[in-house]
Structures are given as C-alpha cells and as structure tokens.
Length: 639
Image (cartoon, rainbow, N blue to C red):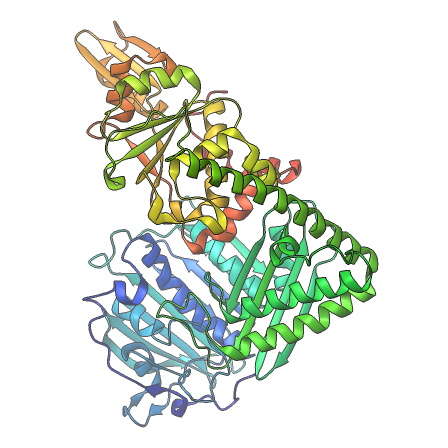
C-alpha cells in the first residue's frame, strides 16, 4: 500500500493547538515513569515506520547518545518544509508545535499510519528539554531547534547535501522536570524495535548505544517479516511441522497478513497488530481469524473422516492449543474501542481476515495432508484432555458448593475478611510453615505451604493441572478461578507473596509458581497483586549490634563498616533455619520487610512468553544460550 508521491505542505492538516501536554503528560504518553520515557522514542520511530509502510523508507537508525539524548534518523521522504497555508508557517514547524497536526488526517500523504493519532512529534517536543530536527530534501539540509516545545531556532537551510539524500533526523533530550527517570535502557528499546522490524517486512532498524562503557549496537532486518516473528517465538519449542503457514491478501482496502505454526506446548500465543500497533485486547481482526480457523479445521476433519460422526466438533480452544500466531492488518482509517487502541472495532477487518485465512488455509491443508493430519490429531487430543479437565473442574466446583468455603485443609487462614487488608504467603514445605505460622499477623496474614514439587505448567495440559494438588490448593486459596473462570473480584488476598529460600531450589520453585500465575491468572500480575519476599542472606552480629544483609554487596559493605574482627557471621540456608522473630522481622512484618512486586505490561508480553518458554520448556539449546547471555545479571544464588 503506497502513499502519494506528492507529499507537501498541503498534506499537513491542523486539528487543534498544543496545550496542556506539559501539564498533563500522562494523558499523552501514559506516564512519566521509565515507560513514558521510552514511549518518546517509539513516537518518533513510529513516524519513520509510517514512511516505511507508505513505501518510502527502508532504514531507521536509533542512537542513545553520550548525553542520554536520542537520535532517530530515517531515509524517508523528509517532513515537508514548504509553507502550510492554513498556519502560514513552515510545515516542519507545524508538525512539531501543533497537537494533532500531520499527514495522517485525511490527506493523501499516508494510506495507513500508526503513531499516537499523529500527536507524536509535537508531544515529544513539548516534553523535551531541547529538540533539533534536520530534513534532507531537494539537495538541501533544513534545520529547526526547540526548547520545551517552543521554537528557538527558526527553520533555515544550513547547507547543501547529496542530491540523492532524503529523510529526517530528530534528536531530543527528555526534560528532567517532567520525567522521574531520564536514563534510557538499551534492552527496553531493543525489544520494541525488534518487534517493529518483524512487523515491517524488509525494514532495517539499527539500534546503537554510544554511552561510555556501554557501547554496543544491534541490527534488526527480517525479509520474512511476521513469518520470521513466529519462528523466533517458537524457537524454544518443538514445532509440529517445519514451515510457518502464511496467509496474505487485501480485501475491502484492508491488507491482511497472518503467520501461524503449532508447537508441542499446550498454550496458545496469538499477537494482533493494526498498522504495527499492538492490540492486546484483540478485536475484529482476531475474531475473524478465530472464526476462520475453527470452521476450516472442522470442515477438513469431517471431510477427511478424522472426526467421527458421533464426535462433537473441535472447539476453537482445541485447535489453538500450542499455536503461535501473528495477525497484522493495515487499515486506512482504523476504528478502535476506547482511547488506548487496545481493541480494534473496524467491522470490515473481521470479514477481510476471515475470508483470506479461510481460503488460503483450506488450500494449505488440502495441499499438505500429512501436516493437516498432525494438526487435527493434536486438536483431538486437546479436546479429550479438555473434557477431562472440565470434569475435574466441575467436580471441584461441586465439592466447594457442598463444603461451603472449600478452602484447602493445609491453608492457615487469617481472621480478617477484607481482601484489601489481607495477604497470603506461599511457602515451601513444613520447615518454613512452622516459623511463618507463628510469626505472622494472625489478623491479616495467611500461609499456604506447598508440599512436593510444583507442576511445571509449561509442559502440562489442563487435565494434569487440575489434578495437581499443589496447583489446586493455590487456585482454591486465591478464590479467583483460572482461564475462562477467572474473576478478580473474588480475590481473597490483595497481596500474594511467594516466600522461598534464597538459593537455587527456592528460585526454581518461585519460577514454577510465577509460570503458573502468568499462564493462568496473568491479571493478578498486571494489577500488582503478586510479590516476591526478600529474606536476608546473612545474619551479622558484633558486640551489641545486629545486621541483616540481603545481598553479597550489602554483606561486604557492612563488614567494611564494622570490621571483620569479632564479627559473628552466619549464612541463612533456608527459611526453616530462622527463628520466629528473625523471619517475622526480616521477611513478613510490613514495617521492616522488603518485597519485590512482580510487574508486567502488554508491551512485555512477547518477551515474557519467550522467556518462560526458554526457561521452562523442553528445548535445551535456547535455555543454554539464555543462561550464557544473562548470567552476568544473576545475583544471590547459591551454587
């Protein structure tokens, strides 16, 4: 889909002025935290990506500079520099100083665009201590300068450039008066820019860090586009067939791309995008895909006698078990539900995706009967396992109804019934249960011991999960249910605290529990209800002084401060070694403890899925690579 070659000042249309951005930055970039800081980069990059989607940009370079400013340069057409008639100012100035001004509001400059409703450039300018923009066009270099959104250097031609050179370079420094944190994280940008490159077939994105001692760069370039995205996401799993299935086409002015491949896991991972914008709540494009997938598979299975006449149709969940899929649509004027672009509402997208996927997937199955059989057989096994899980779940529900509250017998509950005041500690075994039970606040703190190994849900179907006593205990204690039964309003404790030993075994158990919560109750993490307790590693006594050290670094600092002579140091090997007072003071008492809140956002989802698969899946090589790459970041592990 290509935009008009005639991209000039008349394509820049003004909707409203630039007011209140500095007063209410959260309304425009979500927050003034680290997330909002990095969002500034995405806004400028998205404008360059729009040039790529229009067919005029093949390369984007993002640099973190020594002063922590950001430079984004592309080889697109270059922002128009002639006079915008309505404003009577250069179009370049309008783009950077007027909210809702750009080439995306009914002009022919762009067929499709992402960005934040075209407010990106002006918002970044308003929230920057300074911003400089250079445009390379017609053999000339044009430049403007701004401070906090105000023009400080009017547009001028500063010299000639190569007649073949074209594009835009933006450099900005976030305003420390606005942002809580102004230091950029290479890894956060790497994850986002890699995703952007996957979604824009053929686009080359270079990320470079030039800060002293942190020099590095990474290039992202995927000629296979979303097909390579699926392969990347599946690299820690065993694929059921070698090739990624790819469907593409255009209907009703909507361009559709879908890439999918089944693996041997039991969870589905489907990611949806509109004009390269992540739509975590799905929408009409996702509905169209699910409808097409379910009908096409059932029609094929019936026609080829893979399903008996007496057997029910496969459900969508059965067919999507172990599916990794990317759905990407490009729409000229997408309609979203709500202001946050979380869910697509364009009805034509349902018809377009449904039609293209139905037609091309049917053709693929007919042309590849051996693969079609493997896919159908996995779906049929999933159907049987789901039926067994449903029976186990229904049995649990009936038991709960008959037994009243139905809480697990090993739960040591608290007296208070106000969930906002209550917290539950998940502890490992009876040795930790004893001191935790005695040292807790009886009114607000509950304790649930786990006896035996927690099931690795990354390798288990629902029927095994419902049959596992430790998992069932957590589900019942939390009160919310899982998957389609999940209801956060029934959460019995607003703090779920995983409290394990500070060693390799404890870290493994914590990871197993987080894997379960992430896969089946992710909303608990999104809404900030899940925490990791931080028990101390060292107990240090000298004379009448007493210290706890929570890291090796803190331990060394304390010893340097008090001296080693006469110091009595003991290393805690587990929670069970602590007496009641020690455990209560260091790890359980809200006045003196340290907790780590487990956080996630939808921006993290692909990376989190990949990390859990790598760490908890069957494939050894990706796990080895992950450990080698991340070993330098690991602390406080006994080996």
